[in-house]
Image 1 (tube, rainbow, N blue to C red):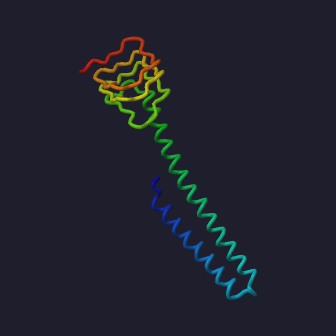
Image 2: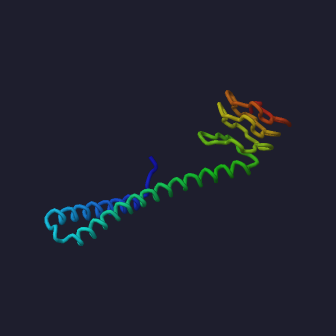
Image 3: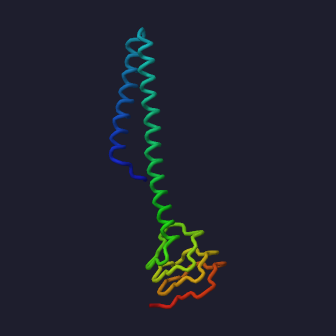
Length: 150
């Protein structure tokens, strides 16, 4: 589950409370005082509006969190793409498809089981890197590359 900011939870709680109270009040008035129909409709509209606002608010909070995570990934990817040396590099669970590692020094990189099919690895220095189980079909490994242990 994506964590929501504390202020977002507080606002959501207040909106839910107001929506439930408005809807309950409107229902009570409709049952006990049917002659006050216009006021009941207004209160029901307010309750419905609050519930709609809650749904939009929750969506906005989750969208903000998703965009923030996407921005973090884009920043990480850009940093990897422009780095000349990334000692100890490990992509973890991030997608590295399409990143050009040509001319990069990947000393002690942990690339075990990573999909490097069709990767651009020309003149890449893999000194001390662990490539066991890495998929290298179609990878461009031309030029001096090294996989010697340190």
